[in-house]
Length: 532
Image 1 (spheres, helix red, strand yellow):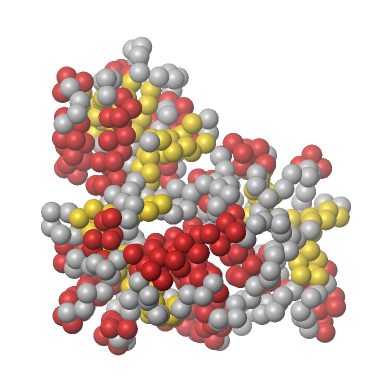
Image 2 (cartoon, one colour):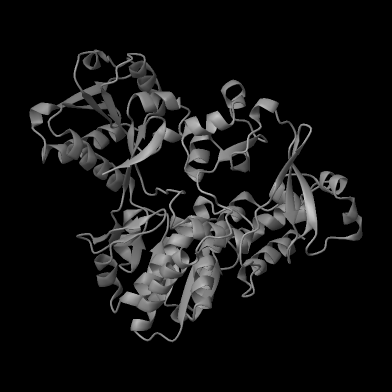
């Protein structure tokens, strides 16, 4: 049953007559006593199961407030959906909000990034977070500063983006474009979930499958939009079965000669397998690799393009930003005596010495279990610190102690994983923390809003970060396909900016193609801002 459910979802996404409306219907909200309700209009293709999952309610609750469902679900019915069980009177307001149900794995940081709001804005809209913290199952109010549900948005914004891509495709008189997407849908794991499901349990889809479907629908949203404007596209889906070994060899079963470009695979193991296979066939297929950053993969097969910058590249770009903004300041490199951290600090030091007076570079090394003294940060003047370490315990303790100095003149630079640690965001804000990121999205961008609406119309879901990755990569793919006679030359010639990722491709001395586009983000007034 779960395989059937999963393929039903896939077919619904893949159907050329995808569920869509000319304009997005804004769900109205009503408060009765302490319960907040939203009105939902049933459209073709929806099921009771899908609606309950969309709003995180049980079938019993849905039938309780909509007794007419005993006769079945019908297109056009207006359902009353309870979406919040407890609504304090002081929280009631008329400000536009999106409701977000907290799921396992959610953090304050990634929720704020997903919706493009600051932590202070999230806390102000959900005062209970100050006392209770973030807990699975909570319903959060996400403040909306641009009306996502307005039906009067001019579609020309989307049409301009789409038409530009089509124009580039027609310049070379391409009759049909075939794009492949190689993703792990985990069908075997989904089957296992079904086999071990108790009768009273609800049907489930493996969590990673949901993320993969989001990525896939982002790709398909773009290609469907371009096709409606006259483009001729064929999307071929290759299931890579996850990174685990599988009875079926997905790599050798596919006819790779039919593709003009491939997006994926996601895992390094599958990228490696594909690279070896294509090389043995002598096929020069352009491959956009979304997440793998292992350099040896891209040395082996020159038509692989590394979309996500490596940790090394991101740290070097972070160092460049530090040089641009603090050339004349003393830079304190803080590290530990582990071999990994010493290599990290050497990388940063070598970069600094090319542009900064060596007398302005000072090392502070934590040795063994001894605490690192922080008295060098107590004097007046701007103090610039680069945390060249992978030691999470050390980083947490260092940030806590430095924050305790209560100095406003300290600026800390560090790796991209630090904001995702269990560290107080107030520390990052007080210490003017800077870090590199392969992606950055302004969800209030007027160019993005029509795509958010289009995605919600077609897939009845929010455009999350995985879907946005798929959307960006398919837009970039159509740009490449419309421009290149030689993939390698065109990839380097096009400096491209998407909604969440940018592409600034360079060829390394080994001949591999890597993306050098890195966003430098800074905590400022409890908001994330991009710095140049």
